[in-house]
Length: 242
Ligand code: BTN
Image (cartoon, rainbow, N blue to C red):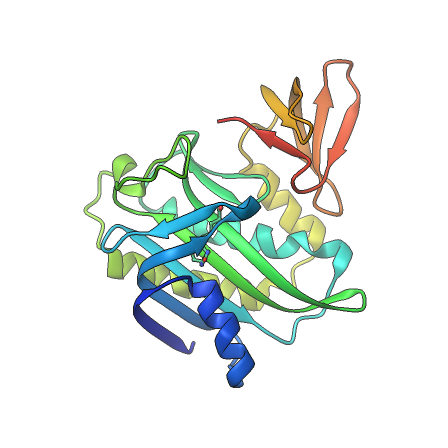
């Protein structure tokens, strides 16, 4: 896989998107930065990458032909790939809808996916991944944690990065061949909050109690409310407070 290694950058996603405007890049090109000074998170949040403590990387995936209705396949593949690698080092690693990685219910990583859409298809994607490996100050995340806090193993950042890139490369290459239902099955098996009562917040800030029942065929989160009715939530329509 082609790899661009940077010392310090504002945002690996932005760097990759800039580069795409200037030159042709190969499929599965990775951009990795030791330090990120103006990283972007989901919902317009910021995301810092601290030298020696975190992993900040972006991947360019091109020549995709993913129908828009299946767009959640990318988030599921990436979340599961990261979870699988983290699970080599720690117990209790789960995915949180739509694209977070949790350890013991606390956030250890997040994913920011920026797709290019043509017609009804996603044709390419810039996938940004930010992971907390060693503890550092993370004021932008409520309930943050880092992998090393939960691991009995001595983690080496370079080694972790290497196996992570191999797994991500593999998962992204296989993604289009795997059916949506089969990915959804794996994703739900690792989904935080599945089957238990939790408090959620709607986009109008109203709280309610419900139980996650899974994800739908188009990536919506299915929550059973207190009346026993299943509600379907798209991105940004609901949040689960950690
Ligand atoms: C989140 O808010 O949970 C998503 C965080 C995604 C952060 C990563 S770090 C590498 C890449 N570059 C960015 O600017 N953001 C993503």
